[in-house]
Every structure is written in C-alpha cells, then in structure tokens.
Image 1 (cartoon, rainbow, N blue to C red):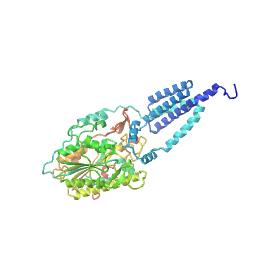
Image 2: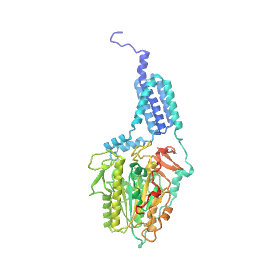
Image 3: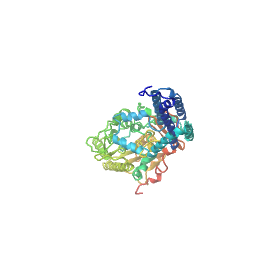
Image 4: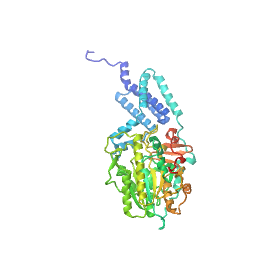
Length: 552
C-alpha cells in the first residue's frame, strides 16, 4: 500500500460511520416518546397507544436493519419515520388538520397579513414548554449514549403511564345525550310558523345584529362589564348556543333558524320551504335588507349568504370612512355609520315593515385602528373596541327611537373570539367550538316603549336555547304584537321559548353537553370527555339577578 492510499476501514470505523444516522434517530425517537408523555401529562395531547405502538415497531425494525443498508437509504428511512412520528403527534394534539391549516394559509383570499401571523406565533409560543423540550433533548443525547437500555425502558414506561392516566377515550354517550338522538329530535321539530299581521296590527321592524367574536368568556377575559348594557334589553339569554365557531356557518344558522338545528355539512344544502328566516319575513310583509361593517368579500361571505341563506345583496359601504383594518388588511367601518346608512335607506323606502341582517366583524382578534401603526392585539384592545361597539349600538337605538318607528332588536353573536387560549387551542383558534367560544350572550330589545315599564330588569332565560328561539320570538311578536294590548307577559313568553340542548360543531369537530359535563369529537374520532379546563370557568356568566335596570 502506497503512502497516498488510505487504509481500508476496520469494523470499528465502519460501525462508527454507519451508526451515526441510526444513533441520531434513536436519540430523536426516545426524545419523542418523552415529549409525547410530557404533553399528555400536561393535557396538550391525547395519546393513541395503538398508533404509537405500530410506529415503535417500525422504528425498531429500522434499527435492526440499519447497519446492513446503505447510508442514503438509512437516512431516507429515518427521515420518513421522523415525519410519521411528528404527524402522529400533530394528530394526537387538538390542532386543526394540516389540510385545513394549509388551505387557510395558502389561499390569498383567507391568508392573514404577515404581522398578524407573527403576532399570533408570539402569543401562541409556549416558551417554558419549548425550554423543557430542549432540556429533554439534551438529556436524551447524553443518557442514550451511556445507558441506552435503561433510557429506552424509562421512556416507554413514562409513555405507557401517561396513556393510562389520561381521560378514558372512545366513550359511547348514553341515549339521552346521543348526538344522533339530538339531530333526530331537531329534524322532528316543526318549522316556526310566521303569520302575516293584520292591517290593524302595529307595524314594527326587525333588526338582527350579528356580532363576530363575542362570548361570555371574552367579556370576562377582557375585563369588560356588559351587564348594564344587557340590562337595558327586554330579554336576555344566558345559556345560548351559537352552534358554530366560524362566521359563515353561524350566519347560515341564523338564516335557517325557523327549523331545527342541522349538522354542519347540511348548511350548504337546500332547506325545506319555511326554513329560511328572510323568506318567511318577506312572506309576512317585511322589506328585507343586508348590511355589513366591511365589504363582505372574505371567503365570498356575501355571495354565500345570498346563495345558501336567501339573504339580500348587501347595501355596501360606499361613502363610509374606515376606522379599523381587519387581520387580512381589509378596511372595517364603524357600526353606527354602517347602521345609519341602512336606516337612511329603510326610511326612504316607506315600507311599513322592514328587517335587516347586520353583520359586524369589528371585534375580531387582529383588528387594529386604520391610519396608526400596527399594535399587537390584547384584552385591553379588545375591551376598547367592545366599548366603542356597544356605545355605537346605543346611539343607533336612539336614532331608531327618535324616528318614531317601532323595532325589535336581536343582539346575537356569531361565536366567541377565543380571546384567551387554553391547552386545547391557542387564542383566536376556534377549530373546536369549545363552550367558551360557542356559549354567547343574546339579548332582545323592544324599541319605542318599554315592554313592561314596571319591570326591574329584562326577562332572563337560563334554559338552553339556540337560534330557533330567535325565529320563534319574532313569530311570537307577529302573533301577539308587543306594541298592542295583545302582548303576552315576558314570563309567559319565556316559558314557551323552544329549548335546544348545546351542540356546537365545525367541519371536523364538535362539542356537546352531556350530563354535568361536555363531550367532544375531533377529526372523525369517537366522542370523548372534554377536559375540565376547556369548559366555562365558574362565574363566567352573570347570575340572573345581576341584570337590573339602573332606575329600579
């Protein structure tokens, strides 16, 4: 052998060269097991021990055959297994499916601005958990090389212990709380009957204020106090299910509220005659309108509402000055200015009765003031926008009252803002419609005169209700006009309002009340108990006695 030739590699050298990828992957695998166990113990994921066991079998088969394969093949196989492990961890988490996230971020029509994404990442990043993961990786690196067998046994022991201790999975709800039974009852509900009022019946308008991103939890988490605002209404619902976590489905549920609650996938399907709220109002003699606080173009909101909800084309925001910008950079307009534009058109129409569907997104997280540098959203910013919104609504109520017209105002949020996240979902994530997101404050106000002047406060409805209750109330007021001697007392009306148990769902997840707690389903899996931390904390919803008028 000449001086320029290298000596052939010996067995030890060959082992060292060929075991590098396998060693690194082994460290990653056992680190992965420790991370999965830690996330399960902390409540961030729900382990599927069967999928993990199958993946572990593949990993150990890889380790057994790694030395007898080429370096390129070993590296490729290790990379595939690592991707499968991370995909399993994602599936075991409460995150939205990757396809849903990708379509949201890659679609130019839905993609938020870069600064919103950076702000979202900053608020969502759990620094202590990341630091713990780094410490675990360092420990895995040193211990795996010195005590590989002990380390492997410890990792699998911790993972199995985490699986044993997590809440029991794959439960079968009892008949009283079965989701299938819920929809069977809802399908059996008759459509709300809207009478056509007689010529002698006092005319009134119907004003539906549909508010994006407001729940009882958001009010509490922002430090706001809306009890005085709601106390000036005539009916308040404290256990109202918005039934959804996103805007368009929530709006379609309003537009199809005369019939029972339908599954999420049926919202884009034709409904039976009598199930469209605005069709029913038109048949009862109302001229109908649609108005937004924005252009309504996000995800073709306006077109979908017309097509699937039989809404009118929106009046448009031409001539209004933007006061905010949405998370995607689109301009937003003041609620009082937008409502004033509707009211001007309504007054000019001379129609005896009119109804409007008004949708505002001015509370959505990521909204910021137009013309000022972007500032990260916070509960304080949210509280400021909420105070501005309620003040503008009250100014509009005064405008309607001063016109001499009678009006029934329905204040109903689409869903909550998820202002404060939890272990299941980060802030502003609503893929799983948890109770803090989908249990919302709803109120009904009669403008022109107090319903019952002697009442010390609104009639508070604590029984579970949802959107059909609002359609029923409108029909009730057409049948027993609240502005005439035919009106029924609020307590009698409240007793007849249809009850709807809580079940909220999005495309790939759902949450349902079951007994004293909640169950949830995600990505087609079986129903499982909802962790207690994901429910409504005690004291979130004010007690009925809290709603008292200031002059009583």
